[in-house]
Length: 282
Length: 266
Figure (cartoon, rainbow over the protein chains, first blue to last red):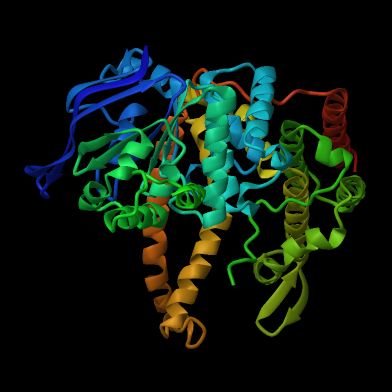
């Protein structure tokens, strides 16, 4: 069964004037179809304003559809009775690491979700330890989050979601405010959770490099899903990606240009090693 | 310049006072505050001083730390003392031109100053030995009966702990904004009070904007983690009374009784 299934999902934001009359409608999501199977690592790519964060908020039931349907773990997000159950099965990590950490001690912050769910005290401690270990932050459990680096804070935030034991975790541009090291750290942790714990991961990003290891990629532009497929397939459509204002990684671009100039290499080169291999053989 | 702000300052140490349940400390502080006003002669204050000395010894916090808190109110103490000394009617002890010192005035001035000093030191012992989180937890439980009259105790406690978490972040942000504005020629140092206050306005506007943005982000993040008020919530670190907490309650009550006896007998 699909853990997340969106059918013709539409979301409209209303712009209002001072009297509250509707001045204009902005369509943030335009008939989006999306399917995620349990255990998959899915990426959603898009530049600013493509609607990808709006989609993330829908999956967490922070927004509800204007039209169309969205089912998360078999529950309709439009029904407000499902709100808490949906947020338990689909946890969300946000962009700004500082603005999503609630407590002044790491372990207390990770315990916040389970506390809200009414988990008994002993089990909260077990979950906190388990989830902090799974992101490699257990040794900082008694620290203040203010003293951690951006990447570490973001890992704490991921642990905070893991402690709720969701079926699926949505990372909404988790690396946008981090330095390159922090970005690698967070993406690595996301892949580890997917591989070792079988967690379904939905990574929302505008960095194409981060999409490389995923099972399936959706590209969004102006509220629509404009491309979808496996990373290799997506990366081979360089000109199409450029038309949707995506920054194609340099290696892929280089391979693409080499191919255009007549070199016999396959489409969709993702990493530097791959290109070196191909060039040696060719 | 803002880095010196120390609200709810905590002095980490391993002491009996640090280990004590925050509810006991809150109760003790309350009793202590009442006791300061029960004591009204030299014997009462002698007893208070001895007891305070014992508690300071138990807390393992350097005495100089507590005295720091007094610096801020020296002016207030002097003004209050002087007014009490000269403005209270009673039998004249000394006369300095138009100013008279009466016996009641002298007694009031001394009592008043002593009470203020005891008050500051006593309450600072509590904040120095209790982490802000323990304090809010303790308050939440101690004030729980107020929910019956619709006081949102849980929400207030949560607001307090979130505020404490964001103080260092906002302080850092203020520093950043100040530096950015100083780099463009803003002047926060020179001029009188009015000019300095005016220089603060362009600082406060971006600070408030960012604080509101943070608040809205945080609210969303809390909602995403299933926060739906205090109802049905469990505690990761619930407060449990230990044997020594119970003994501490006995000591606190004994202390109050002794003080009342002193007041009645002498």
